[in-house]
Amino acid sequence: MLSKNQLKYIQSLHQKKYRQQHGAFLVEGAKSVQEVLQSDFQPELLLATETFYKENAHLTDHQRTPVEIVSVTELERAGTLESNNAAIAVVRTKENRPLLVGPGEIALILDDIRDPGNLGTILRIADWYGIRKILCSETTADVYNPKVISASKGSFCRVNWWYGDIVPVLSQSVANEVYGAFLDGDDVHTMAFSSSGYLVMGNESNGIRPEVGQYVTQRVTIPRYGDAESLNVGIATAVLLDNWRRKITSNGLA
Amino acid sequence: MLSKNQLKYIQSLHQKKYRQQHGAFLVEGAKSVQEVLQSDFQPELLLATETFYKENAHLTDHQRTPVEIVSVTELERAGTLESNNAAIAVVRTKENRPLLVGPGEIALILDDIRDPGNLGTILRIADWYGIRKILCSETTADVYNPKVISASKGSFCRVNWWYGDIVPVLSQSVANEVYGAFLDGDDVHTMAFSSSGYLVMGNESNGIRPEVGQYVTQRVTIPRYGDAESLNVGIATAVLLDNWRRKITSNGLA
Image 1 (cartoon, chains in turn purple, orange):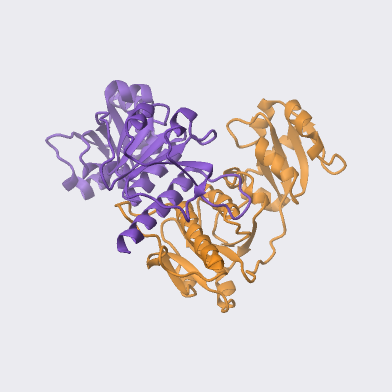
Image 2 (cartoon, chains in turn brown, yellow):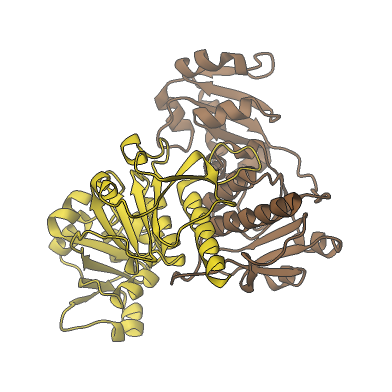
């Protein structure tokens, strides 16, 4: 049974302002909670139905994480999901540490990706394609937004991010290739990729800002065979990473 | 100004049952309404703000389509979008006609894609990759659902669909290659594609049903370089079509 104060605290974490103030965020639903309990994130409270708790007690460090057994109604009142018959974890946010791309590594740069669903999907795609580092402009959606966490399907546990001014990062990174998604770039099917570097994805409506675009060393485009005006930014990220990985894998084999 | 009966009729079209009963569906927002007015769909009523109407009057056939000038409040009350300052078109649904894949043509088969957002995204992707025909199992989300129409970003005007039992379609289509997305298929990066055929995409949780899978002549898989368990079905559709188009384009050039 949740106290009024616990409920109020958990509900406050639906909002970015309070997530930042308290340094905590919500992970909701069976699969995501199971993943976060096995990750290096630090849970501060677990709300679970009796059934979920019984099946997952071995994942919980009782010394460190208090557990509240709650009803489905309480879970749905406290959280953001329309239906949740399993659990919510309240988890400490991580320190915002700079991330640099190393040799043989591909990193993503997100320039003002506003939609939380898109950001969550991009985390999942990054995780599929073995991308471990995502640099986000300050205007990019908050990764701790419950919609981002849900859409990432657990991938938020395996991908690292940093938020800040991406312009100086790019200006100081002259040794790396910087690929940027544009509508007028080279054909991603036929162009060459280096084994490491950055892929920059821009805002859903306006694309990459000029102050970021000036550091793009290679403009890339997904060839179009029909009439749609554009692809969703998550879809475009997946197709570009798929081509990048394919090329450097086949080069490595050749 | 909308009459009570008009409002009631339009709101009823939020539900599949009434869309089927009335043979009509809703297209909402400036961009989608502009596209539908220029397509071969038949609008039966246009609700528009004065501003939208003035800018788009040339797109409307006043002889055939009555226009109601309405407020933003009325638009938002009648429709499903949280914000809509432009227009809603009430449009006739099309007859459910069989679609067969022709020579040199790629068609999509959707086996039980349940999420309207995924279906809308798949229409947009199909349109980008020049796929004009989509065959949907009866359990696939209703293409006329307002969420599908919105997510398709106008591509519903350029792609054709058919709903029905896909099993006999496949069993009678022995001349065509049938590619199916599985987690244990051949690597889409290195395998060969024929210049025409079907791509089958399965349910978000359960994949392709066995009774459909038995007609798949080539199982395909997107190689994974990281740890995500799966990709979203829209993302997977885009990556598979991107590889298919790339291969048959480069074969054509060689």
